[in-house]
Length: 213
Image (cartoon, rainbow, N blue to C red; front, side, top):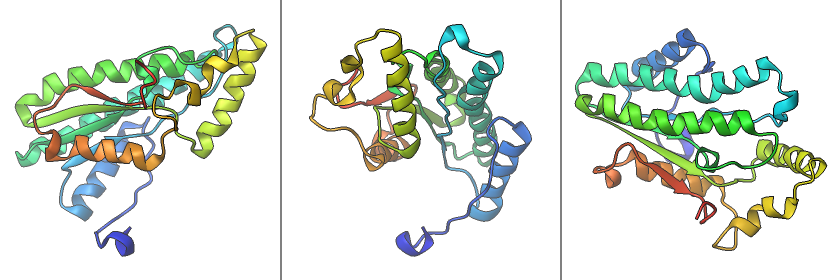
């Protein structure tokens, strides 16, 4: 990133389920970059397990990463933003799963993403007096390595459950004739984090190619 974009960039390994680790990551940003102005909560996992077969620990781990991780990240970011008095922007990566059911086997994921969408609204309410805006971005399916593997598992589970898997075809759900790319989603997140969205807070922006119409 330094070479390509001529910016100062540092990396920090963070366990988003651990409050001390998240706090340490935020402290690294302050120490190395001078503060926290924008914070994006992007970590997420999506194991495919039917509700009837769902072990407690799988459910709890999904919520620990996808929902608790957003709470911890937002809290630590807001603490550092408020300390400077300059405010900032927090962007939570939700999912179209925060608006609807997606496929058999993804109950934990869908539940956790609905939680993030609701949390985004409450964070916006509580942090507004601090000059902190909070927005969500809800991407459609993007063919990352993890998504490709998870989708295949979900399709197999759906077929085994007797679901018409053609209804789960993301190309069939897209109104624009193509699926999204990571860069497509990054552009929406950039808009949310920038002053171009200065009047916005509490909303979750659907970057879904019309999937949830």
